[in-house]
Image (tube, rainbow, N blue to C red; front, side):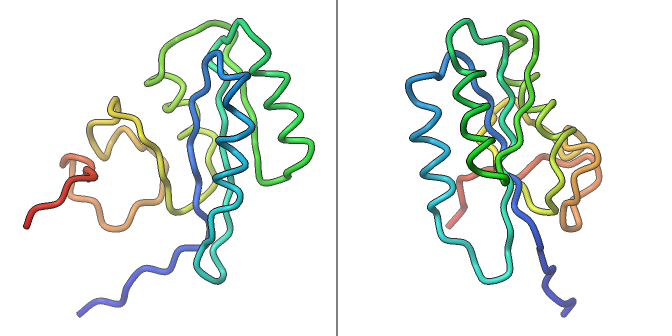
Length: 129
C-alpha cells in the first residue's frame, strides 16, 4: 500500500461578489476552524467586481490576518472565473472550494492534487454507500 500523502497548507478559495455584509463572518469562521497539527492555511479571496464595499472589507481582513490573501477583478466575471483566478493564486498543496463550475481535474491547473485520474472528473461531496 502506498504511503498516504502529507499536506502542508490548505488553500480555501473564496469568490466574493457584493459580500460586504457577510465576508467578515465568513472569513472569521474559516480562520477559527481547527486544522490538524502542522497544517497551515491560507484563504484566497477574489473580489469579483463588487459594487459595494467588499474590496475594502477584504483589505481590512487581510491587514489583520496575514493568511488572508486578496485579489480583485475589475469587473464581474462570474463565480467560475473568480475561482479560476483563486486557483492561479493559491500556494497550498490541498484545496477547498465550493464551486460547481469546477468540472475536471484539469481545471485545477498547477494545483498539487494527490494522484488525480487523467482528465477524470473532480471529486464531489456526495459519497456512494
